Image 1 (cartoon, rainbow, N blue to C red):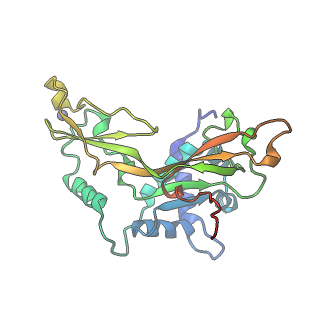
Image 2: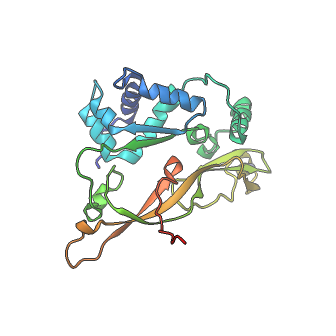
Image 3: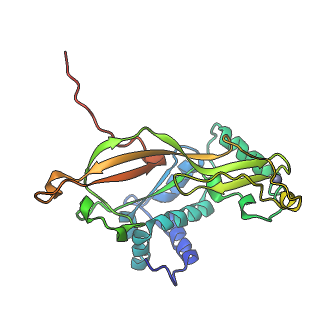
Length: 270
Ligand SMILES: [Zn+2]
C-alpha cells in the first residue's frame, strides 16, 4: 500500500478520539471500560472491532480503509493512542515480577542512559500490559485460502479453512533486555521477527569511547515475551477446484489469541 502522504500522527489522534468517544448500544464507553480493566490488570486484550469503527458516529471512511489495508501498522498506532489514554488503576492488584521491575526503572528514570544510542531508550512495548487486536467485520464472505495473494500482506483478511495441525504454545521474545557489566547500562532490543540476532557489543558511549565491547548479558527475567503458537489451516473441500490438491497456510497466533484453536481426535470408548 502507498503510505506516502499519510500522517500517522493525525491518525493516532483519530484512533484516540474513536477509543474515547465510541459508545456501544447501551451508551457505554466500551473502549474506555476495557482500558480501565487493563489498568486494573483484569484483561490484557484490547480488541478493536472494525464493526465499531464502521458504526462510529464520526466514521472516517479513509481512516477505516487505512486500518484495513495497513493493519499491522495501525495496531501500533492504536497501541500508541492507548498509551496516552491509559487511566490509573482503580483497584489493587498483585504486582508481578514485571511490575516490580518497571517501578524500579521509572524510579531510576533515564539517568543511566547517555542517549548515545536509541537502544538505550526504553521501547513503549515493554511498559505495556495490553495487547491490541483488530477484529474483522463478520459481514461479507471470507476469503478462501487460494484467494489470499501477496498483495494482502499487511492487510486484515478473513479466511475460511480447517485447522489441521497446531503447535505447542511457546514463548516469543518481544523485547530483549541486556545489561552491560562494564558500564551498567540497560539496553533494549525490539524483536519483530521470529528469530533475532542477540547483541554482543555494548552500544553505550562509555564502552564505545573505551573501545571496549562491554560485557553484555541477556536478562531473561527483565525481557518481554509473548505467547506464540503456529497453526496450519487447510482449504475447505468445497473451495478446492476439481483435480487440484487442497492448499494449506500457516497462521501465527500471538499473545491472547493462542490456545483458542485446537483439533480433537475421537477416542475409542471401552
Ligand atoms: Zn557497556
